[in-house]
Image (cartoon, rainbow, N blue to C red; front, side, top):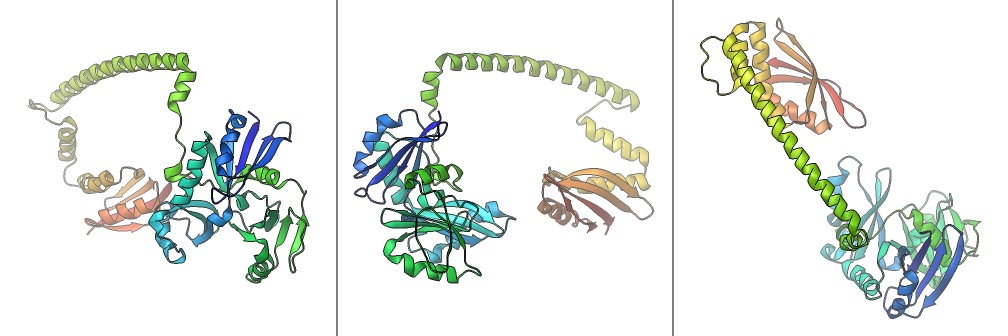
Length: 396
């Protein structure tokens, strides 16, 4: 469906809520208006219908900040965000919801909002029978239009977007006092996409189309850099509803899955029978090659032992001995694979090229192998999904 319902909630239940229905296909406003308070959201239930619902919330209720966080190890470091920002936040971090936004170099944008506020907004929507697809701070829905900043008046406030994931809401009385200080902190004055007619000293304004504020935000929310409905607030899929709508299709899928599982079970049974036949055949060949071998416990282990005996104690024996010594290291790091092996019997040196998922896996392998061998690691090269390196091992 090309029509979408956009709602801007207030910070408290008494504040008005703006709404707009926009047709993406026709590029026109179907309907719009303003509700007196959150209790009146129920009047939008019928209008929402099957339309997706996008929700904007006041930026004044959300803290938009940045942290210096290297890209390497970001996944683990993100878990520590509450503690990294603890000193700069007035509330207990356990009572706050953290959402990561876009990254610019070493700087990662973060949105912080109180759980109580999130639950309040969601309760208003639930009571009205509305299910939000996304919840976005209103200033981040302002299109930057290839400028550094973007500004627009909304009721008694000014929405100011100062970057991909940064911005704020300023009361009109504070605008002239706050903006000069914000500009002074920059090396050069920003170019500002202006969606409202205004003149601010020291600011280069690039006028944009002066549309209805809700329309500007509705068109910009499509490219919003973050969604507050994440983590514990990620919407759950309505499986029951879809199964009801597509009951016959669901039954057909279940039957197909059962038949596939039966077929897979038969294939597994056939493979097990074939495996047993090959095992018996391998043991028969082993007994023929190694006379007097009547008892077989572990065929591979016994064959390896016989091969070592056949190779004696020369260079071949030393080679296999070194491989045995590396078995614990390879077992501990299954994602690390040798691609080439080269053994120099005269120097007692084993050189191999390996691939792994990360630098850390190669370093871990080096530490494990160094317990028995002197280990030299060559330069490491990385591609999209793997790291390669050359490792040289010598006996201690």
